[in-house]
Image (cartoon, rainbow, N blue to C red):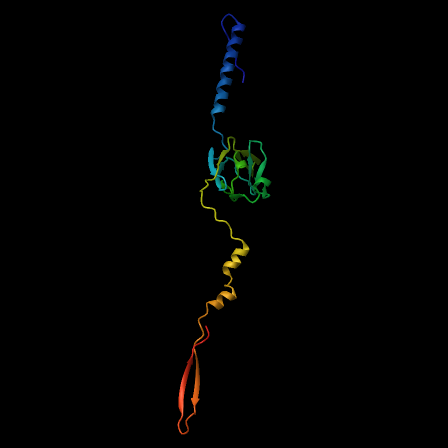
Length: 221
């Protein structure tokens, strides 16, 4: 659109100055409006989370967009770490998991949900960094991709150690001796003294009569 400025006396120089000033004002107003306008798409993540070494942590996320989804949107969630263009540590479509996080990542999300949770298990000291969620999907206008800009800073603190007594593990020989019976010699000495023996003696010394004597013999000690 052309803007014509006419000044009395035909002062064209002054007209050009006014035109430039008006153009600069229009450009500045347009830039400010565009800068302040809210983005119609994005990813929401907490700014900071803390976890204990050896424990687990959950990073919640959600995303929004203005487009109409395609019949087959093929929604995909990726996670990066360390910086905005860092390595991918998880890919929901291929099931890829970074070697550092092997068997330690669980994504609780299914298509077409627009929110979910990434869970990191068995936290390690090297897990302390920034994590970024990236979204990819097909709309009626084609494929769209976007990602969280600030990400989530994870802080890992050492696990608490509770001091306690150290109980040494008994050796195999001592365990067997504790469970084995006492030696045979000790068992025999513990046996009671044999009972007394009884002897029966018939006295036929006198004819016509007989007597029965019971002789008790003490047992051997």
